[in-house]
Length: 106
DNA sequence: AGATGGAGTCGTCAATGGAC
DNA sequence: GTCCATTGACGACTCCATCT
Image (cartoon, rainbow, N blue to C red):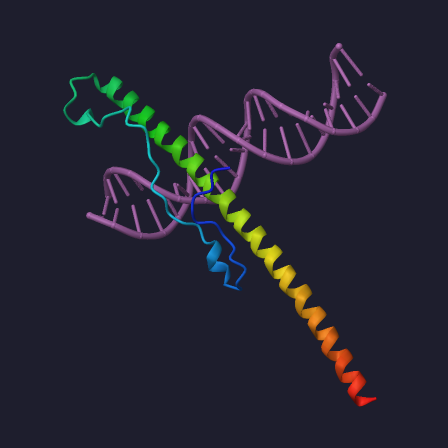
């Protein structure tokens, strides 16, 4: 599993912004060198190539978008787990303190 | 073995916002 | 205004589990 370095939880209680999506520049394969400026192609061909380039970029962008979304969700899930643990711990601590207090009062 | 439904993934389109 | 990146929505497809 290749995690992208910015893994999530350190166990501290940060805020949810820890799970904000990060920008990471996507790397498109440089298949299409942007040449249409001075190309000697027919307009139709040129338009077709532009469309293909657009589709390719968008395909890549969609992949990246989904990857980031997954990462975000995973991060939120980690956060939930951490907070649930903290909650359990605090409840237990409270219970113990109540018990101590009860013994003192009696 | 085939039918069926749910979940996940992918490519595409269209809307939107920000940069220039 | 235009260009470009981002992302929600949609349809097509695949995989897997369950049912008959």
